[in-house]
Length: 255
Image (cartoon, rainbow, N blue to C red):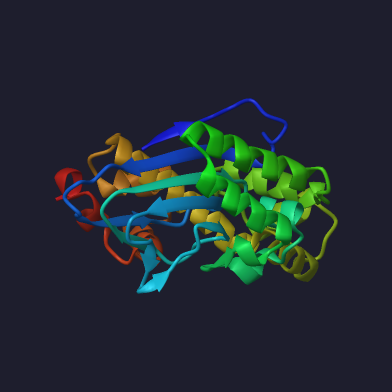
């Protein structure tokens, strides 16, 4: 699984592009697990058996929102998935949707508009992965031409992400003139979760990246590096987004 990063007028909306492929001639059962990362995404998938979440088949072209609960995608045999990882505010800005309506779920893009259904059909008929990526880019570029971004909310999400989640609601209020209630309402509508929960997700992502990189051998060091009050607080936060403990996630380093 390797990211594709391309210069584009869509830079402010596309964080990166992932291509996941497996040419499986053994018809193996596959399980792909994903945790909350603070982003939304547009995904196209082709597979022999279909892709499922808890026995529910997914559309070949879908838009997903914030994921708070861990997700497990299942399929059998060969598959290809092209995932445009979008910045948190993209669902609202590009598609005019309430981002909170897509939290922990997704939208079948064939039902979104006649254009998006045509895009899905074009993706199936495309001759190469590169052509498919270009089709998805063109679709998002067309959406961007009619977008209505909220620059204040965009700046807030960027502020939280740059601070690795070490931000309080009071910090955000000081950056704006909004009341706490107005901030929560606007943020949840456009990002999909509250500012407090979004900050927790970003801080969790910072910690799990450090664990994946093998930078630390002690859980307490990961916890303190990411601003958790103590190791137990970190473990609770980790279990909230993964349903497993940090030691179960990385037994090699933290056993």
